[in-house]
Image (tube, rainbow, N blue to C red):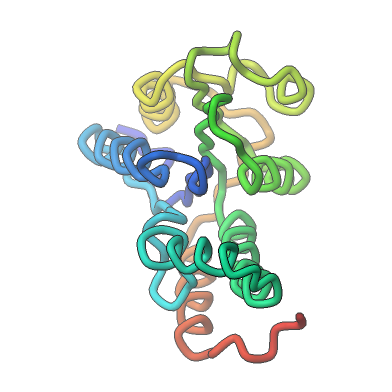
Length: 202
């Protein structure tokens, strides 16, 4: 049986700052569902980052709030530049983005990640809490409605069909094969582990 997505790389975008669970639950659910259904993706998850990258949940999130409370704007900018750089670099490295949109939670980085992926001509799959009718109208001008899903389960069903070859991919899908994407990600991980990030422009 065909396994179209074997080795493909997906980035999981979605709210973290204002999400009550830090955006962890849906990400863990989709990774588990895809694995159980035989879709063997490499997943880049900003709530569970590659070693060496600045985290966004747990103690790191508390640190952000502490800097806000203390009005340490320079420290917060320095801290957040590392997060923004890492997350957008993961978008660069992926083959496609899966983003969770909950209009009741303020999103900021997620929309930039979606825009970055779209500018790079990468597929963006949107999971919209409440369905397409809840999706911000602007996104219909950038993302095809066939790439919008009412639930995590619906998105997984679609990816299973893509993986089996039952869905024919359009020209937005350019999947890097023969280990090249893994080489890029491994190289990125090694650089992050070796670099103290001291030379970032402020």
